[in-house]
Image 1 (cartoon, rainbow, N blue to C red):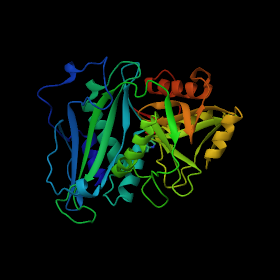
Image 2 (cartoon, rainbow, N blue to C red):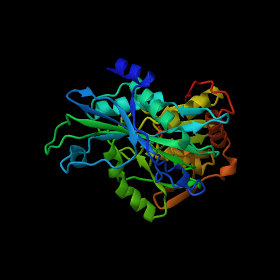
Image 3 (cartoon, helix red, strand yellow):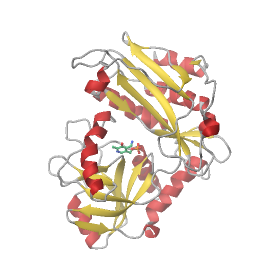
Image 4 (cartoon, rainbow, N blue to C red):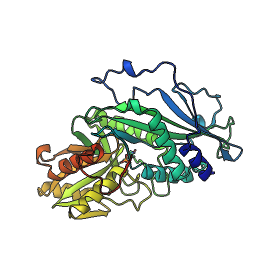
Length: 361
Ligand code: PMP
């Protein structure tokens, strides 16, 4: 199947129905809210009778649903988020889609859904971006955010893996996600994911479960929570939709992915790979709250940031810990995170050579 589908995509035989009226000229590029403006088309590929059906690209629009559609009730739903960029010379590049494809495969498996092979995921994404190429902004820092997702579509009340599924890709042109540094709060009661749970899968329920604790944090003035492990709350996991990274004594430290409670972030992986290339010491291991607090007290915590596709790097200005606020060094002093952010941007725009081979052009 994968082979046939890839051949079909490469030979350009996917059915494409173009919109009669593009919405492109109505976009206000100077006021572009994240995730609220949608491009002209979407890609749909259904799964039934034990097989993926032919994919189709069509005008973007609502999906109608039977009220008993299983995903609405039982949450068999996964998604991805990645970006396509317009490079300086006008070429188009998607950043590491193979990594999203691999993570999608893992999410499929964990949620008992039929797997979309990596190559198929990547080729469908590339084809879709080609159709939507006019939607990739040329403005510096802007990109086309891609949202592939898959959900169970059986019209059936009862708990079992769905027999039918729908895979969709749509896109949103976006600017910079966080303009301001973020304030985060270390969460020591609520849990995002527990060992043996679904934290590593990019599944809808993880995000729903986080809403209430996040709201409590927001009411106290924090943008995001820093999740700690569900058992002891002594170890740091991740934050909102970002992995967290610290620079302590000049060492880049980030929670290890060995636990199945943390999403394996592609931005974090890229930051780690760049840091290693620069010869910076990197430690991926358990990171305790106590260690970060102590390092801050002793002036050894020089940088803390979130890493994720939406923001790339979100500097952490303040960490709320119990009744205290740890105020971190001024953003201008954050040598590593500023430099790595600029470097990743430069790879995407083509200003520096893509020595890692991360761009799918
Ligand atoms: N953790 C969570 C829970 C996320 O939703 C995301 C965003 N996908 C990340 C981390 C960062 O992952 P990535 O760098 O692949 O966007």
